[in-house]
Image 1 (cartoon, rainbow, N blue to C red):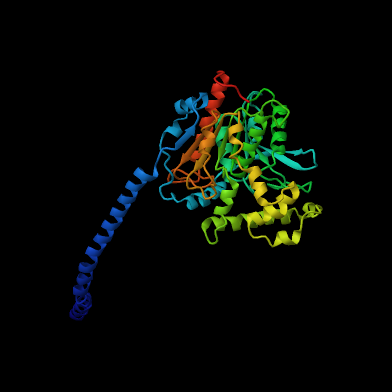
Image 2: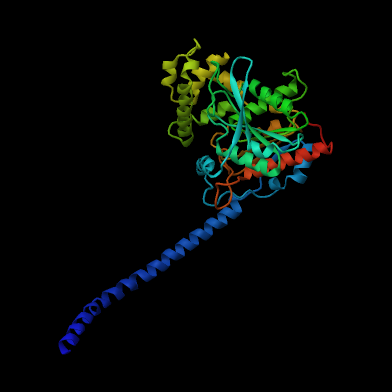
Length: 421
């Protein structure tokens, strides 16, 4: 027993010799931890103060006074409040990248309706959740969604917008351009920002199926460019049919001036330049996928197309050849929205973020000269993003704004507050 007691005493004496060193380390690290904790708390407090007072701002609105602007100011409450982007994703590039991930958090089912064009091409209307909407009344409003460059109905912004439309009880449908979203390219002609024939065809098809329903539209990025030009052409009489067939429209993240946007994306090693390279790669994949159809067009040099590294190179070697433009600058001039906004006769809302990496120029004067348009400019939001909340992968602020605007237009059209065109 004595030996065991001594052994135990020996064992317990070992840590006792280290206690002074441990106490010394604790004495040293305790103040350091307090300093670090205080620094983190102070930094967090400063950032929260910066976020609340400088990041969260009410959108700037530009318009010509008239019926539409009066209705927006009175009924579109989201545009009269501060937009609060995701607190940990304020940076425009983080917003833009995270927005692309929204496709992973929304399940969508579509009923595809292929449509043949007059030149032998094929586009498709993807009707969102067809089983549930077969029971809707014939006069249920239809919202036509136009996607961006190299996109389709599977893009996150399309699926979440369709979900928002469906939750309202309306009928959402996405127009997939030629060769997009799994469509075969059945003619040697691709889609582009200046070509509006397919939108006209889609609107006619919707009106044929649902003659009693009002048709609304939402365009994103390149889809916004196409939609803007289409509405202007309907306003200036380019199309023989009276009016656009669209009661009102929302256009999100429109570059507006393609030349300025191109210059911005051409600065080597800028983040915009990296977007340019990435999108050019996706366009080349689109061309490779449809190589058989495009190779039938004698004007196209597939070898030079394969060597292209930027969007401008591909526009010159594909779009210009197929649509008769002398150079990419001519195509950009024909597709840019600045010249078309004053001609629009359909009630429209343009939603853009000031930090959008693809923004060319804000059409402030153009929107302030046309009482049928309202331009809403947020300080933050990125490109086709406008994320909100701590979890930014659900409904975006742009979805809510679009639904609120279209709902207002639908209600006011029903009350004959203004005429749909």
